[in-house]
Length: 349
Image (cartoon, rainbow, N blue to C red; front, side):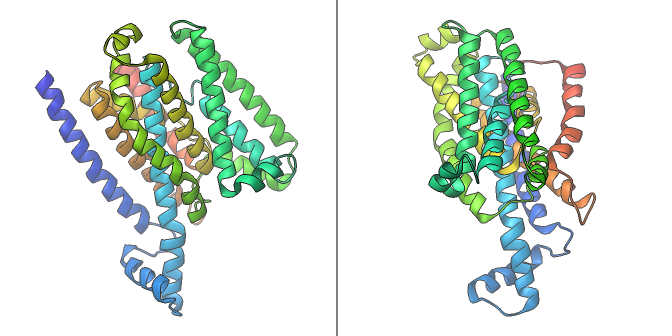
C-alpha cells in the first residue's frame, strides 16, 4: 500500500507540473485578440527597443501588459487558495475546513470591499499610506482577524472543536456578508458596478502593479510553507501527539493562521472571491497520494494554479469578446466535482 502511494505521488507531481506548463503556455496563447505565443519574441523586442511597428506594439500590449500579469496572478491565486485549504484542513483535522466555508474569505472580502468603496473618503489616509499595497494588506488583515476569531471561538482555551468551528464560520461569514452588503448599498453606481464584478471573482483587472502587490505574499508563502509540513503532519495524529513529537503546537497554530490569512487575503484582494479551490484540490490530492503534507502542499499548489488558469481561459473564451467572472466558472467546475467526492468517495482526512 505504501509503495503504491509513493508511486502515485510521483506520478501525480509529474503530471501536475507538466499540466501547469501546458496551461501556462495556453493562458499566454489563447485570447479573443487572435494574438498567439508566436508573437511573444516580437513583443519582447518591441519592449526592449521601443519599436514603432503597430503590430509589434499591439503584441506587446496583449502579451506583456495584459496576458502575462494575468497569468502570473491567476497562478498565484490558484496556488494560494489551494494551499490555504490544505493548511486549514490540516490545522482543524477536517476536510470541510475550507477558508470559504468557515468565513475567512468573507472576512477578507469585507476588508477589501471597505477599502475599495471608502478609499476616497474614510480610508483615504490608509490608501495614501500603503499605496498599491493598501488593498492586499486590508484583505490580509480581514482574513487574519476572522481566522483568529474562529480559533478563539472553536478553541475557547482548549482543543479546537470542529462543530463549533463550522458553526462559528457560518456566523462570521454571514455577518461579514451583511456588512459587505451594507457597504455596497451605500456605494454609488460606479463603485457598485466595480464591487459586483469583483465579488464574483475576476482576473480582468490584472496588471504589473497587482503583481508587485502580491509578490511579497508569494515570497512569504514560498519561504514559510516548508516549516509547516512537520506540524501539519503532526496535527493529523492530534495535538497531544504533535506536542510529544517536539512540535510547538501553539506557535505553529499562529504561524498557520497567519499564512492562511496572507494567502486568502492577497488572493481576495487581486481576484475577488473564488470558491471551491481550497476544498476540492487538497481533497483530490489526498485521495491519490495520501495525507503526507510533503506531497499534499506542493501538489495542491500546482493543481490549484492549473485549475484557476484553465477556468480563466474558459472565462475569456466562452462569451468573447466579453468574459465571464471566474468565480462563476469555478462554481460550475467545482460544484459537480465536490458533489462527486461526497457521493462516490466520501471525505477522508
